[in-house]
Image 1 (cartoon, rainbow, N blue to C red):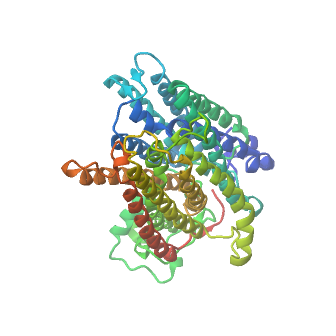
Image 2: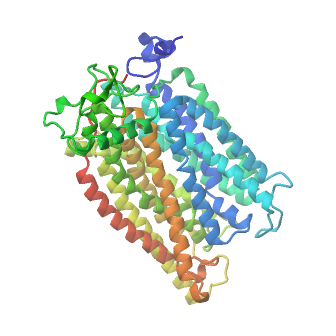
Image 3: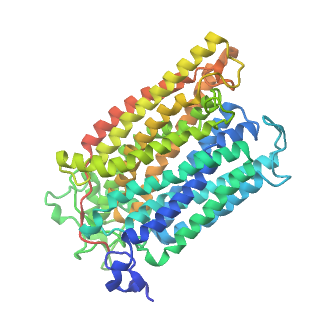
Length: 570
């Protein structure tokens, strides 16, 4: 079968290459395999990562601040590596083969991780619960496995949500209206996996063994790969459009080469292909926009732009190519406002867990103890509650008032989530303040667990879950819809890097705060024993940063110009 026979006119794969059988591929017929893959992959990821800070602290024998920093740095890397996967997907491999390749790396990483906690010789030797003495080699094996997982997830994260959205044809109104719902249910599936991870797997790690605690996620990842390949014949695949970085650089170079030229008032004089379709594979033409007009110079034709009858792409670019760069530049300020939110989000697997360790983890008067990391189940339950409410109630109700087909615009949705996240940090700070008051009043400083139930943490987890439904799902849809067609994996990866930078920012703030507040022998804000600390100051700091961030977002959102595509995919 020739490559062109494999794709439809809109750049998507058809069933057995036959356009007459389009109804047999894509849409909700293909999505269950993609959603099932994501659910199992997230179960594997969260099952391994939710309790990771405790493994660093209690098995690798690291101090609280070091464990928190290592956890945040690794989490950050998991959201930077998607740039690698996205580039390969958009430029050369396509989303299907990128997911397939990196899933294999992921499975090997998860397997090695399980072995590092199970096999004698590479498993840290422990003499008691909090008395382990890992060798350099044992720590090295663990970190190699951990960063193999980070690389593997880098090919999956930016592609799976985009790949699912690809199953709905933008030029078919009947299919397009389902795309927004897909993002809601896609995120819902993520949290079904997270629910199992934060309840069952965290309990296994704390009460059975870390070997099983990491082994079950490895099995889940193998199931995820099986799910994905099972739907192969139902998928629609967009053609990779060539290197997006090259195209962006061509516009920059051409613009600066022509910086002295005046852009014509009649924009129809700017260079564009005469065909109805774009000359970029997998991309529709994009309508010209008035802002960022400096880059329009790259589409102004001069005699020197043509070499022996052909166009020199480093001197002359199409309007669509110029609009690709403009779209990315417009996304960057919105992207930047996601970093503070990600720093707030990262506290669920870091300081929230360490805060919970110092509280009463018993369920009622029973002997059963809930692992501190399992409290993230309330974040997950909050999401599982709010996704159907948003999709089935909020969207139809707000649609009547706004006239928007999705009820709220993507930017309005993101802004509401940023607002809610402020109250999550306020709730965490107030709880810690009250906890420390009781510690000081009753001299509980050396108690491993003070008599204050861990379930007082529930509000802060629930608020973050609610904020995720608005902000993170809104970002997923926004970065997919506003991305140029041939750069959707790249823009999905760009959105994910906010999570990375949020983790790095939190790690940096932790380092700075620890350095400043531990001077002259003081315990500091985040000591090993939080009963001597002031973690609430750190939560207040994040709350203030979140307020400032929301203000910046509102200004940027007011300025934003939405992308307007033309025609069909090629």
